Image (cartoon, rainbow, N blue to C red; front, side, top):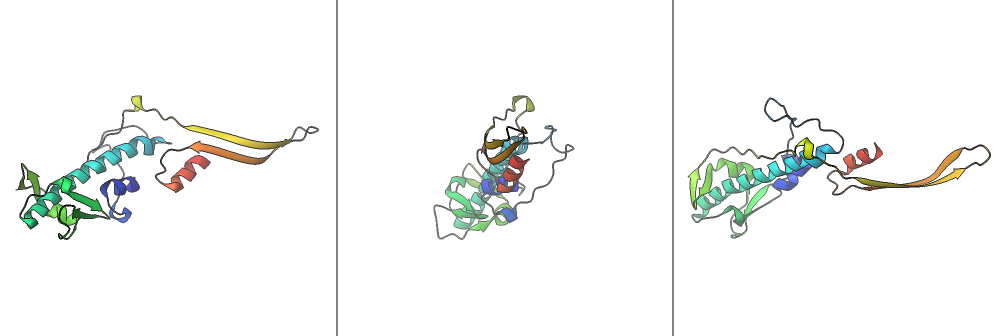
Length: 178
């Protein structure tokens, strides 16, 4: 999930820390097993990271507005490698995520307003009742059959899997090989 968050936020992987969910603080969405983890929980993680990114850009817009003494909106900012930059004024030094949330400002009706520097991204896991995983695979095998003994020997195999977008090559290998 860290890879999904890093990509959605525009952060480096080492800037992301994943903690395990606790149903004392989150809803119980059922077991995460097999392909369900990346497909459904990964979708919720991505949505939460995108929500956090939008909030982060709002905080950064407040910081840039204060520094430039002119209105800067979230859509005038970009995030890459954990740095937030102005796309409308290249003379402004990029800021870090920590700098953005320490600004304590968000833009409301074009004005910087003091705000708490807490960001909580929100995303939801699709209900299990609507969950459907459509996967496809095919296998092609060459075999030798000893017609006297009936022994079958596989001489070559080519498994093919439609895996969609690969998030993590190692987990793909583990999933396919079982």
